Length: 158
Image 1 (cartoon, rainbow, N blue to C red):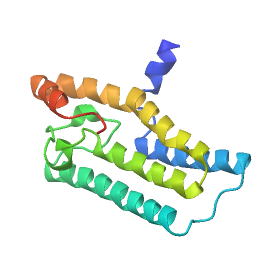
Image 2: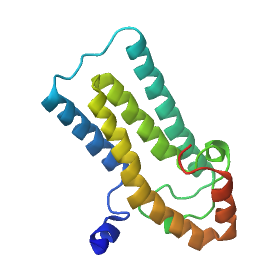
Image 3: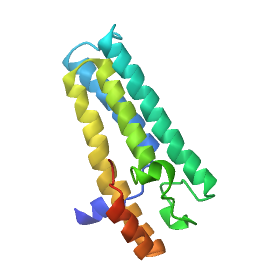
């Protein structure tokens, strides 16, 4: 079992995990009850805010990587050429994953079924185990104490 779990590390790109999670959320809601139409008022407004926030967090993380001219390929963290700890990376060590989790939360709210909230939770748990943990090991090997200090200052998610 441990070999299977280790095999899953860095195998599925996080955007694919996000899309599969979103599809699974839709499937779950459609099998337990009808998928809600976009709500009026507060719910629609909250969905819009969450989408805007999620996209902004994603973009801020991506632009910070580009500004530092380092890889943003989540499957190859050992290719990082610099440790990015400025901008949105002062708030969270994983802004692009946080942005996708926020988008999944917006999707759950759009679907209008509390059971859809299992999707963002599953996404966070999966990424923490199979993506973020291995990334952290790779970055510790590359940047040592600098990354250890960064980990002590900035939370993994929020």
